[in-house]
Length: 125
Image 1: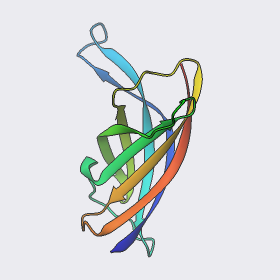
Image 2: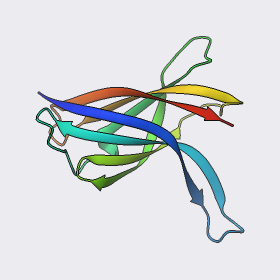
Image 3: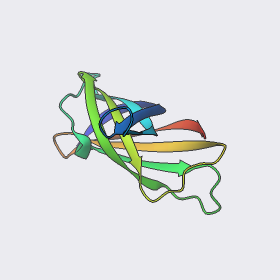
């Protein structure tokens, strides 16, 4: 088993569904910038959405639980640097400002290569 080094930052991103400007729907969604290198610092390229697992924790929960977020996009910008688009699963959107913690786990092309990290994002609606 080999260690992957994962560094991540979260921000809000956006995507749209539909055709022209009149019939499209815009969504604000969390986006993660994720750097993946091996233990020697060499960038790990060629990863797909299936190589990433993301969970998030909302700060105002009574019984704190990490919730699943589907990784719907994993664009590799330069070798080992990915932008992940997320789609939360069965979660009520925040009201006001709320901090979220994100746990990101990565499995390499060799299934024995693993790494994980945490990052946070404050969303205001």
